[in-house]
Length: 187
Length: 187
DNA sequence: TTTTGTTATGCAAGTTTTTGCATAATAGGC
DNA sequence: GCCTATTATGCAAAAACTTGCATAACAAAA
Image (tube, rainbow over all chains, first blue to last red; front, side):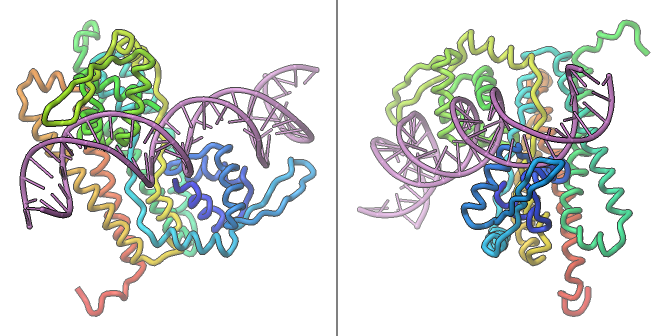
């Protein structure tokens, strides 16, 4: 959908290769936009053909050659155009919730294990976001000002993960209640 | 991805037509799984061909004819199999955050308007989820027990929307700070 | 020294999802 | 009497995304 525009934005702030962009998706923007490397390369090709990007092949000695992409004026114009039109609200397709919805058809143990797996992932994500936030607060005011907007998206990630983990606790309590006699003696 | 399984689950709890399912996606499950009617019909066709669903054509006088789908034993088995295997964590692709990330390239007014649109949608969703929750709490204990698992997914929706709106307030404060001289005199 | 990881790019095939179009009957509001 | 909404289904084309495969060089760890 707007992988196109996510790429335009990333290249606007700093030119780079497909591999660069892919890493930026994995690290920085991964919590609000995901893309496989194949798709990034394909999209770069399409955007070049559309005239929104230009690239220079860059031969390297110790590393494989790469293509350095940057925005063309047309690409910049397209970015501004896109920023001016409304984006439609996000739709959620969450398989975990589908599974939980049908939870009555499987065992509480199975659900607990599933939740544990997801909790581990979300905790790790939250930790990494909080660490990025700490770094941000350590920056000089000038740089913080320049990163104000990306910081707001970081906040979305942090609040979102915290809320998710809070919910996970509710779920754990609810799943414990299903098997009250599972622990032998008890506190 | 698991539209297949979302459909199996919906039909497990109650058989119905494609149109029924589409409405259930829009109303009940809409906050964690979205599907267009075309995709639902297509998927029902595929699931029938795979032997997981069976249907009876049902002629109606006042309304167009419809097909009533229900799970086959093979469909039930597939559902149980799917419930036993881990689902992978959800990935987020959120165009609003992409836009906000690039917010420095557009006007605060534009961003504020965009946020207002999204806030209205999220508030409406939250209201409707809270109303469903009130209904749930009004049910007799027996029915609440039967709906325990779907209720957990409802909680996810509620906590998620509340967290989103909380974040939106942070964003509004941050956007106000960009144009401190925009209001003429004072408070 | 073999294996694993990182850098770097991409094609091909398949699946999933969206968008556009099409039909058809009835009910209700203006 | 006309317009709009609701019920009900679906095809076709395109766009978006995933999965599998392929290559290639170097660096570091086992």
